[in-house]
Image (cartoon, rainbow, N blue to C red; front, top):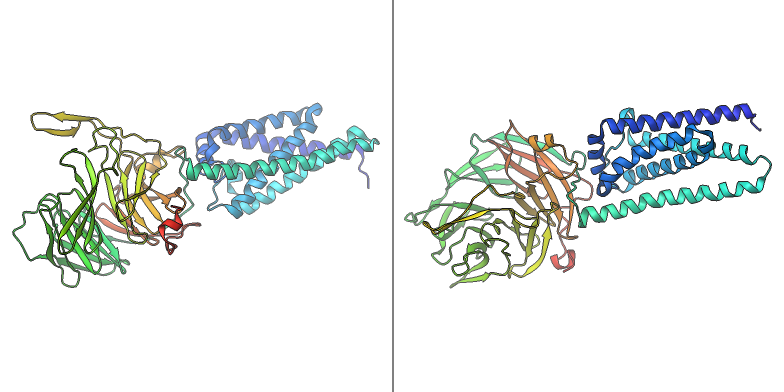
Amino acid sequence: MKLSVTTKSIFLNSICLLYILLFVYAAVSKLLDFENFQVQLGQSPLLSAFASWVSWAVPIIELLISLLLIFPKYRLIGFFSAFSLMILFTTYIIIILNFSSFVPCSCGGILEKMNWTQHLIFNIVFVLLALVGILILGQNEITAQVKKWKPIFIALPIVFVCSVAVVILLFIVSEDIIHHRNNFIRRFPHHPILKTHEKDIQFNSYYIAGIADGKIYLGNITAPLNILVLDTSLQHQERFVIQLKNENIAFRRIALKVKPPYFYVFDGTVPTILSGSIKDWKASQLMKGKAYFSLSEPINSKTFVFRAVSSTMHNSILGLLRISDTIQVRLAPHLLQKQIDGLFDTDGMLLYNEQLQKVIYTYYYRNQYLVIDTNLKLNYIGHTIDTTSRARIKVAYIHSRNQSKLSAPPLLVNKGTSTYGNYLFVNAGLMGLYEPEEMWRTASIIDVYDFRHKRYDFSFYINNEEQHKMEHFQVVDNLVVALIGHKIVTYRLYTKGFHPANFKSKMGDTIGL
């Protein structure tokens, strides 16, 4: 059944009007709330690496297509452009729904109220409308000259394939940039953590000494030999006091580590290491006076990795302490790389990943972490996603006291770390691109890095409690434990692509060493 010229004209004008209304409304909505639109694009799995120019290009293209559709002379070009753009949008949604670890939103106005399935149907309808418009215009222009239909039938599949290919290419390139060559853009999956329990522990002087076997062990800065033990549901608690066999030690800065069935008491200023069983919390001396240190982590009951200051170079170094019949100290001065003074610029956090049997050292003031084996051999240097590759610190030397001190507040890049399985968790100190300042005022940001693929994976945030920011955290499997003010809070971490227990292979196999 052939349609009359009048009917075709009504159809054509109606389609033009619908497209003009859609594109003008969408473009204006984006421009009026441009900052939010850019933030949303920054969270897109396909477009985050290109958010800066895509955020301008999309509304401008939508307005240009609307202008083309207004003038009859340019309507065929306008419909082909509209067809291509809607294919781009539709392919984008299909990839988001099927291949993305999370689903952001980058629409404006009432379109934000649609869920993604509704949005997909909406886009498909407009793809079909553009196709109808192209066919009506083509038929009007060539009437009986059937041979001239061929360019349109050739152009349509070419435009379709090219549009789909552009989105797929953007997805592949953006994923590579975000994971391996990140330009400081974070990805926040929707609701990756679920708050499960919280408990008021009365004081803000606690720190996490260990988590194992369903129990959380808290040390206390102001009462250094006291241990508070809670179950992970925070329903039951016990208190213990560590008993020292030798009470003549002049402790100055005690740190506790609990790795069942043992616990460890460190004070590198004495220096001394004590250990005991969590069954009776009685500590006996393992080492005294052999090596001064500022940080230490147990690898096993007789081996410890530590950070100290070289007596010859006067910079920070990592070392290994083995305790058997004799005490053996091995230093690795090549691991911590000096940039300014070798002391403050190499300051950082020392961890031991028990699942992968790797030592992890993360710098405070630069975007680097070191992955080291238990023989102090460097496996590789990883990078956090911020762009601070050189420590921004100012160091002053006070000759009268023979001391070096920071003469200005340093730029803190990495505030805290935890590691479990194939992952490193970093409490970030700097705000990334397209992130609202309000989020940074009301929450702490945790970036997650994958050792297997040497890449950044995603980020999540832990909200403040009673205006207090998170002070300390630790992750075990998918359990996140945070100390916030005078509260301890637990969360469960669930998001697509996060597999904390998948560490059965040897580290050399999983990260390609």
